[in-house]
Length: 89
Image (cartoon, rainbow, N blue to C red; front, side, top):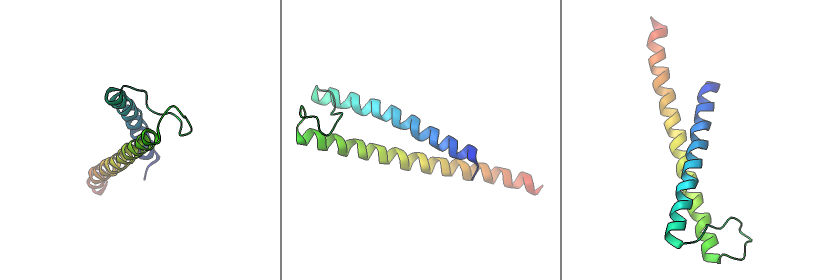
């Protein structure tokens, strides 16, 4: 796999994570009226809030990683399929 494809995949993952973090934080504030927990040891938040935030961010992060990884692999396959007939000619 080309270094370029790896860099593109990494960029998509980082960009998606940034956008998702903003959206999840916005949704949390809208739903709870409070800022999300930023540290597990912060005593201003309840156990329930800290665990829910951790679970929510873990799920979103995993979805982004899987989606970006699979999307990148599909793009690589398509690019290689287009390149293969051109090289055969």
